Image 1 (cartoon, helix red, strand yellow):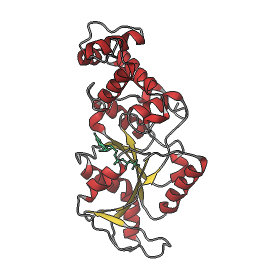
Image 2 (spheres, helix red, strand yellow):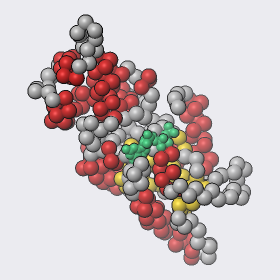
Image 3 (tube, rainbow, N blue to C red):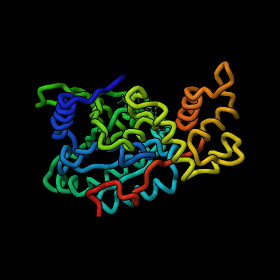
Image 4 (spheres, rainbow, N blue to C red):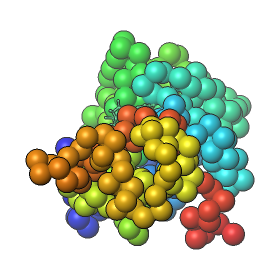
Length: 289
Ligand SMILES: Nc1nc2c(ncn2[C@@H]2O[C@H](COP(=O)(O)OP(=O)(O)OP(=O)(O)O)[C@@H](O)[C@H]2O)c(=O)[nH]1
């Protein structure tokens, strides 16, 4: 699915989330653990207002463990609970329920004191395209998708998925737009697959990946392509990888398109290992001192 975020789309996406806010106790904000800053919706705080939230650092299996810990602390410092999960393998699912209960403990205690009958926590997942929303919903539903009846009192019928006795999840997630504030954010989104390749120049994405590896993980780059040295010059680096990998055009020159595809594919399929593309201490968020 190609999503083009025009102002009208953004307004609609926002309205859809806003409409459902009143139905839930908590928002599960799903972000990509490799780019927790760039994969957050820039207006999320404004959109969800004071609704309790749990940040889920998804695809933690593809991210650097130490970086993920730093991100959890970063959110904690902002007063937001965050946990690392792997929706594909179903890791962290119990933790989601536990963390939600912890966050909502006071609210539910108050309800109990007022004599309100105990009920399951109601939640909704929001996130940018490709963050893993459907994968997480399927995991939490655990194949036994037990759609409950419509919630009375709302004009449009809502379907809820029961997750054990403790949690009910809206079956349609809120899709929000990513940040488009600068080129680097765009490159990170493209490299991790959050935006369609056609939006950005593929070679720019591959160059970004190579530069990142050159700086942060030279050993992994050397090891993957069996490089003797890593040329500083990016064209030379493309040439070297092309030669070693046989990415050649018929006359014998380097086929840069092939090298480009190779690098992007290798990154996405974790041939360079688990990698986080941004750290909280890089002062990415202008609102953070
Ligand atoms: N390695 C890994 N891959 C994941 C994880 N969660 C989701 N994926 C993969 O990420 C891709 C996107 O997942 P989806 O569940 O389709 O994402 P979505 O947010 O529903 O995407 P849209 O429908 O575009 O909004 C799929 O290829 C999933 O298999 C995870 O925790 N680890």
